[in-house]
View (spheres, each protein chain N blue to C red):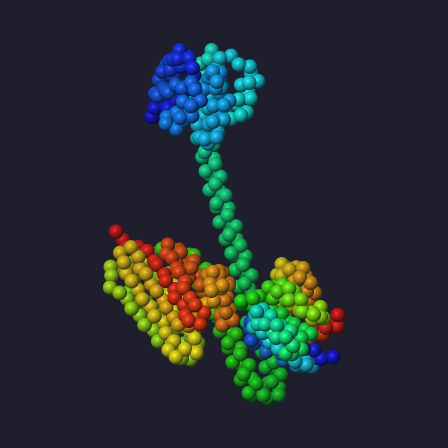
Length: 128
Length: 374
């Protein structure tokens, strides 16, 4: 089933690469991009006011200006968007720092991938 | 004891006081002795006499040594307190010591007194030195902790800032391989441009990292500064930086006394600020500018850099000088620039102030002391 995807990364080129991968996999109905956590939150506010469908999948970078990945997750939880548990948030980061992985787990994020996202790994994540 | 020892004696019998005098004079100790025998006199004398040592008898009418000791402790004076008394029980003497008295000497054995005084004063001095050293150690520890945290943050952010563009280039190379097979020249050309941009970012980050590591190890030589020359050479070196429209630059260096400081550090500060002003210019404004003014005073040089760029939002301003903080997505990705600027200015014992309004522009005011050779 095709998904709505939100790509969040401050590097436009990374968003482009991940878009290409999703297109190749043929799993995305619609792809939106945001350059930082704040832009992503703004998009969710738009979704919430009903202008477009919520994403099913968020590929989230950690290290971004203005609002980083962890700050986004914390704010996102506070928004309490209805059915937000169905939204899968996957962290896609170049960090392999254990502290980041642990912090992600503590926030309830189960999947931590490196970037750019690889087809095989993303498929196995979506099977869960 | 070189100068005269100031002794405050709590004693109601003048003869006993006389015996103490005689004992000290025998040892050729130079001293001035003040005798008090009431609580009020004692309390006042502590402030007026400023004693080096307090000798206290125990039982005076309406006032005893324990109370005297408590008064000393309340006033937090760090003066040795020696009980000089007639026969008392050993338990009492020990309890005095436990309460903070430095020593006790029996009036029947006054020959011990000079040594007891000397010993008590020395001990207090040693204690003070030890406390000072402890404070110094604690401060150094705090600084080391702070440096370690900075280093930690630096390593973490740097590895991301270096790795992310490399990953982008690898991803683009992969895509390019496919496009090559399909002979899609247009796509290839697009990908090459994107690779260039990522590598440029990488290069920028490396430059800033080098600057950061250099700034702490720069020599401290001082030379006379020609501001016009420095600023012009900065503009020449930034000629190829991004930004399609030329930003008008106005340099005004007011006349004043010759100014001396470390040229490399000053150069780094100005380079970073000018390049920021260019980077964050406002494309929507008719006439983007950067005005630089230098005021030369005998004690310092004051430099203002005023631009009408995109400005910095009020709530973000307190953090712009933080290591790796990026206030805008237009940032080149390292967030080190202003941190280096502030560190360098502070190393020159100068100050930097920020005034900015989002959408209007930003002004940096820097003050650098004039290290003029006398």
